[in-house]
Length: 75
Image 1 (cartoon, one colour):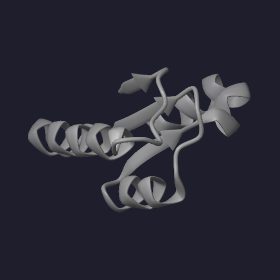
Image 2 (cartoon, rainbow, N blue to C red; image 1 turned 45 degrees about the horizontal axis):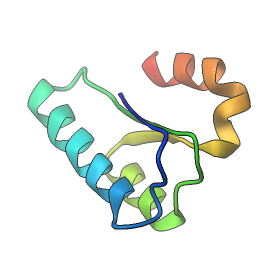
Image 3 (cartoon, rainbow, N blue to C red; image 1 turned 180 degrees about the horizontal axis):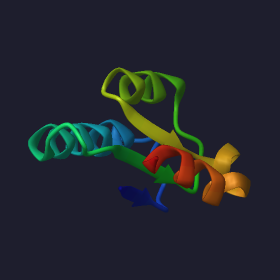
């Protein structure tokens, strides 16, 4: 799980976090899941990239339901 509190909309920071999570997930095997949690909004393009890599994104909109979304993501 990668948690970010800084702005991910500049300098492709979200893309870098997604790339790192994807690499870790692939190295870890089939049972490993990637989750990116951001205090701020994650751009739609970055969300699509994460979805393609089977990485769950929880951003600003999902924070009120963080506990529920994390529980669903790790099941």
